[in-house]
Length: 519
Image 1 (cartoon, rainbow, N blue to C red):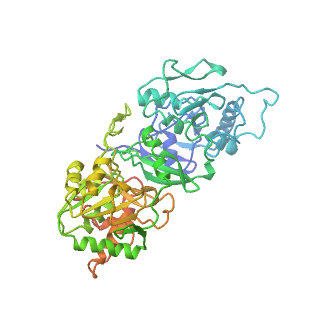
Image 2 (spheres, one colour):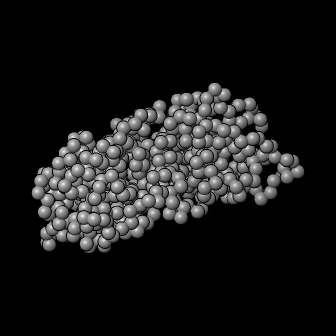
């Protein structure tokens, strides 16, 4: 089907977009930001805030750009005197009762009201002699507070719960200057995806209890990443302060998660801040562990693999990257290997009205990548095989007591890990590796989309990415071999991704199969 295209001129920039595109979206393509509050690309547009009014030549009055489709040949002015005066009036109206909470508000630095008032608002208020209205803070649910004073009634939260989630627990109660966001008195905002109302709120009216008073926006370092919680592969931002992860937020990817993440993924970051990390390679000399350097540890690992005589087992965790999984399989080439990834299961939670978006039951972010590399999901069989194995390589996986006992009975154990596990007995080597927030890597989600994540903080101590440990040991066993020097090279060295680089994936990923890229 041929898509009809139309051309318009916005602030002197001509753009050509599909017919039916709204003015506000066409303006984005022209590089022009139209100020707005109620509009969000993943929600219905009610045009209630009136901040996005623009002027169209030969039109008798200003129009809301969020609900007005463009027409061929239109000339649109976003910053004309008439449009700016209208927005100035809207901002003055919104600030009649809005408190001067910026010094304590969690949204300061990320507040769209603050931004647009600074950009286009008036220098003084005509309501200085009148006291502002005060309303108490309400508890909306397990992780959400409603600060009514700051609310500008954009209704994004109401539309998200009603139109996207499908649970109409929020509404606009009362009318006129008494209006506020109300909640069903018999309900709480405790849906599995309810936390998104915090991200959608353009001001600091809906706030997360978990993040409250933890950090100011300008103190945070922000890194593009992938949620490690399940096989959906939602795109996220990792916010860190002083190298500690303090918040996970959704990152837009219309093919995977649109603009949302579930609350389980949102809160699953505390393991990233564990303080009991292994920070130096350790070797067991038959009596006790002793710290060693990387050259000695790598030589020990290469010798173990070179001299092993018998079956080998690889037990992998669901957060291991394709680079690490592929390098581990490469290290063990030539041996009889049983490899499996541990896939914890939990309840699934669809979002409601968005197809193919859910918290998935399989809590292993890289299960798709493991299967592309020939690593199965029959973890119980692999653990059983470990009991009689000549060598077991444990790649950053959390084991229960029975699994640890089975692994401990193997002839030799190498533990590539972030946290030591004393239940594995005297492992020949305990090698410190980075977690997914300290390295570059790729996960493949349930739909076969390979997506890249970036390092959000430095690695602790002497930790290396697991792919580097395995490739370096692999190269030691044959002098003419050359190990990949970067994560991107390690990615391209794997057969399912042959010839690709991290740059080829962009920031939203690409669908791959065993035969290569398909989209």
